[in-house]
Image (cartoon, rainbow, N blue to C red; front, side):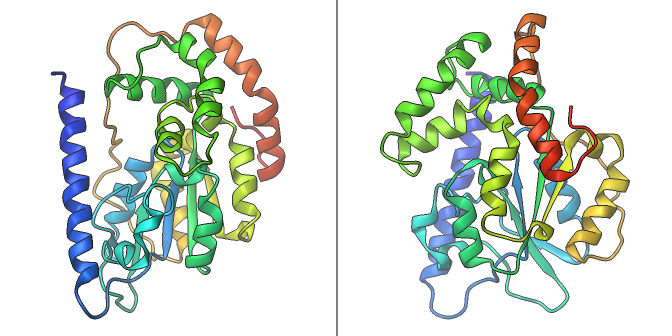
Length: 281
């Protein structure tokens, strides 16, 4: 068994243990944890694990029991007490948060978040959609979830998603397809932000280019802290955290890259207009 597949098994076991403990805490009489003050909502393969680590290091922040609780997407039916059970009790002057990259993309999430967290703030990281798509593909393949080559997977994506969504976005099949095979769809960022802006004021959602976070982590981190109302702080290190290493020859050929650049161009232009950015990628 490959290292990635073993790691996937360990990750699943950890999630089961974390969820079981949350059920136990939720069933216990009395108050549960606080609701989060802010969320990192995505995107996937855009640096959310690194940003989660930077924010969790802040002395005035206490994170949830783990990354990717997926309450507002996959596990919404488990109820508010189950969600609260992942967070520490409220403490004056301390903020708590979680990070689930699927939140940015799943269509049902913005309305659910707005209903339960009317005062929360949100941070989204957006990466070059071409690079993000290929990183997503490698991630799916490393967990033995993708049997196709990259070009074939891109060609199959529209039908895969359409078939999985026939009964709505909240079935098991839909979640699997939306999380696993959405290589190009997740790079159409303006569509996703439109859904969020329909449910909350734009000034409560801070959007950062992943490339800017990588190039100037201290500066972007300081801006994010100001947005969240946190005091200035510098972590011991701005390490880049990733859960997958590239192996073997790339399938992101010049031809595939050029085709994706053309495909994403109008979506990137819309994103620049939406956010007032001078450039995207």
